[in-house]
Image (cartoon, rainbow, N blue to C red; front, side, top):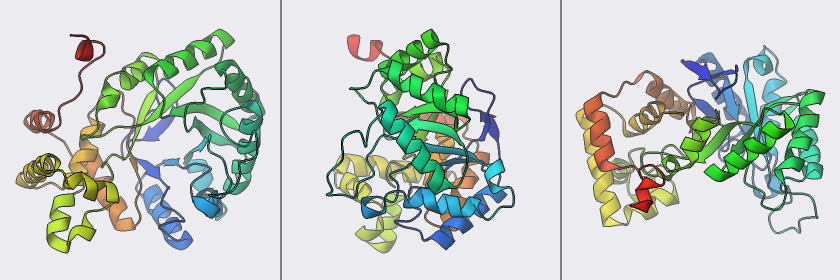
Length: 332
């Protein structure tokens, strides 16, 4: 496994991030534990979750599965850089949300941290991430709440997720005025097929020293061999509904077919190429991989050692062109 610093911090994290969103809804507790053991054995030390994972009536279940894994001991908690998130409400789907039980008020941040610590069976969260921007809560209030948690030792670093470039700038300028560290990471949608983050989010993250943690690196399975899987096993084998819907567009299907052919000519798996490409991108700490099985984890691990030559990188840019920088990409 390769490691890098998380943004401008001294924290060392693996170049692959273990996403746990499937733990509970798709993968049972025992298999989830096995996947985490395999990840740790392979040197993956960066685990990502969120308080709402488990979804529906099972919100919080994913954090509980991590907590029961940590409780087994063996240095598991000490070896892991643990990241979770706050923003969404914890009410079951369809239930009324009580006022102040979601978003980023100081009250909800305090409540949510304590609840996550209980579920995770730990005394601190290494990276506490704002799952979405809260347009109603000022950054001064958010940082006041985080500063208290840092002083208490319950949170070490703060990060954002799904924030625009100007949100990152505003957050860190406010933190700087308070003498706080501010955001150290941004978790955003970024992959070969979805490169809009390159326009403003990633430049802002680089300028303010945030590590970029891409989610959905295979774009819902579209970049994981979706056409080949459909050919071999029928339409139901394309992966997520997002991939199947995307392939219904002839232009998208043609592009993905060309992509899979390009990978096959190099003797590479499409999903591994997509992950390896992200590892070449400036500012990227590591993509989040969310395996449902150990085999999926093993495939993702191969990407760390995969080297993409300049010719292949140029070909990938031709198939999936970037947006270009801001403002040049839209100003003229």
